[in-house]
Length: 241
Image 1 (cartoon, helix red, strand yellow):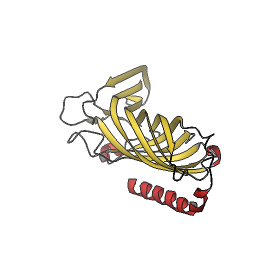
Image 2 (cartoon, one colour):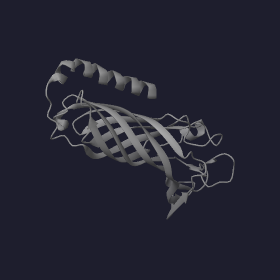
Image 3 (tube, one colour):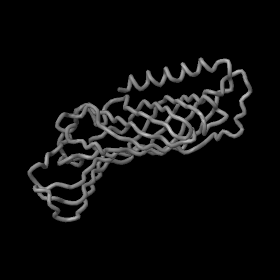
Image 4 (spheres, rainbow, N blue to C red):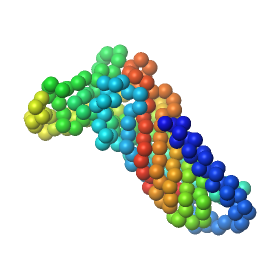
C-alpha cells in the first residue's frame, strides 16, 4: 500500500510540475500566502499485518486524529514547490470487537483475549499517541492563490511514543445485556516501540486534501511481542497548505 501511495504522489507532483515549467518564469506574488498554519487530520485506521485473530476483530469505526503546527518555505527558484516542517500530535484509536489487549501483562508476548462467551465491554479500544515531526515536499498549481489551487504533498514523519492505553466502556454480560456503566482505563507502553517513521502523501484542492500515512520502520509492537503490525491511516486533511 505504501509503495502505491508514494508512486502515485510522485507522479502527480512531477507531471503537473513539468507542465507548469514555462509559468515559473513569471513573477508570482506570495505576499498573501501564509507561511505557518495548523494542519488537522481525521482518518480511518487499521493495523496492517496484525495476527488473523486480531485483524478479524478490528472494527471499521477505528479512527485517528492528528494535529500539527507547520511552517512552509517556498523555493526561490520555483515557488510552485515548497518545503514544510512542523510539530504536533498523532493519535490512533483501534476499536476491538469482543477482544481485549493485556497491555499491562507480564507475559513475553502481548496477549489478546477473546470475550465471546463472557462479560465484555460494549466499546473497547487501544489508543496510541505520538509526538511527531512531519516534513513535506509540496506542489501548488497556483501558489499565489492557496485557497483556490490544486495541491500535492509527499513526505514523512518521525514520532516518539507519548502514551498507550486501553479503554473499555459499559460492561455487558455474555448475552449482550448491560451490567453497569463501568469504564476501565489501563495505561502501559511496555509492549510498544518508542519510535516510529511513517511515509505520508496528500492530494487536494484549497484547504482540503485526502491523505495517507503508513509506517515505514518496524512494527507498532516490540520485536517478538506480536505480529509485525503497521499503522495505516487514510483520511481528510484540513489545512491552509
